[in-house]
Amino acid sequence: MSTDTARRLWNEAVETLSRDALRALQWQRLQRQMQYNHDRSPVYRAKFEAIGARPEDIRDFDDFARIPVMTKDEHRRVQEESLERHGSPFALMACAAAGEIVRINATSGTTGVPTLYTLTAHDVAIVNEMHARKYWRAGIRPGHVMLQALTLGMFTGGLPLSQGIMHLGACVVPVGIDGGTRRVLDIARITRPHAIVATPSFGQYLIEEAPRLTGRPATELGLRWFFCAGESGGSDPEIRRVLAEGFGARVFDHTGGGHAFHGISCDAPGHDCTGMHFVSEDHCLLELVDPHTRASIPLGDGAVGEMVFTFLDWRGGPFMRYALGDLLQVWTEPCVCGMPGIRFTILGRTDDMLTVKGVNVYPQAIANTIFRLYPRVTGAFRILLDRPGPRVTPPLRIRLEHGGAGPAGLVAIERELTTLFQESLRIRPQFEWLPPGSLPREAGKTRYIEIAAR
Image (cartoon, rainbow, N blue to C red; front, side, top):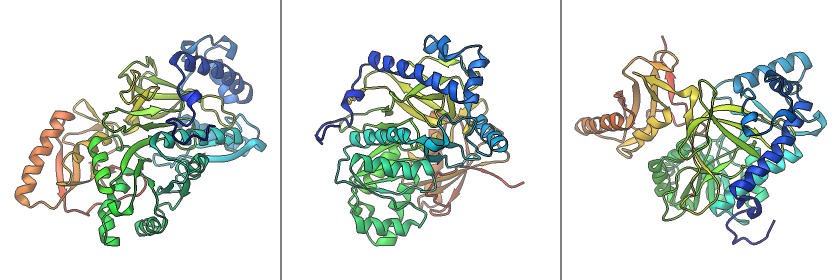
């Protein structure tokens, strides 16, 4: 790797590949990966058998798309079966020998039993490379100090992120948020970080709490970068504006933990860049499918579908045609910022989708709409359901905090907010107003939906 810190990209040789060259590299690696998966995992061997094929029968990407998709529910069932039959949750799906596995990552488990990722030293090196690519694009260089203010128990946002920052040559301060907000602020005062990695909701909470806990605004923390992680919202212009002004920092949305799917927004000055740049295409094949039928959706500019990915050049637990339940929109046209590659936005989770009078609504879209009236509203809210979705009996009930308005002001805010919901989401919710600070602020992933007790 070049030692020139002025270069724009971490790995210019790969990150500047043409689309044709990149697709050729993906196909070359996919052919090897299919054979590897087939030979080493009974679960993946069964996937090929389901379509009556062997790896050598797969002649192109369209052929590959015939292989059945794996879901998180299926993954969990395989883990349980593997544990019961073999005494290990990895025996049926992991492709590397037990002696080669050096790290086990897990999802946060916010939607159920955590799913586990097995990595070899080779895989860990790939993850480190992807983190370095993201932060380098944003301007992080050796000598910068980055405060890691995520729940370190969220394994994919814990050690993998720390190691990736160190791989870049920057200094990481993995304070986590488990010790509370005051501790995060105290460590920030002592270590004087240049950047922070946190959920957007925790960033907003730090802006609110810094004056009370330290006597000084969050702008005096001296942060130059705020990296949104762990939850949606970081791509919403209004949320990014509030974070940027509250910290006096550049704000980036990014994704990718201890696996091979990584992206980061560009946030180039003077440009309105849509979505996150996909920085790991050489190690992750991305597809879009219909969430209901699993039919393939062409990866054209503006296409929307459920994300399906396949790890390339991966040895531990290489996911193949795996669906996490994320709904993506992609852009394939060149970005105005000049950075190469396709871009994507995570619109929401397919299992979080609510249907109100035939209209599909995602919690993050509700959050983004509410936040357009900040600071007249704090942005804190909860969706109240009588029973689990997706179908909601109208009206959709939303409990949210105002920003300190009196009765007359509250009437005006509700009128304006109702109009915004009708124009942007085509629904008319019922609002229940609370004073500022009434709802808990979650430092981890915010759960917007609450099921009312019967």
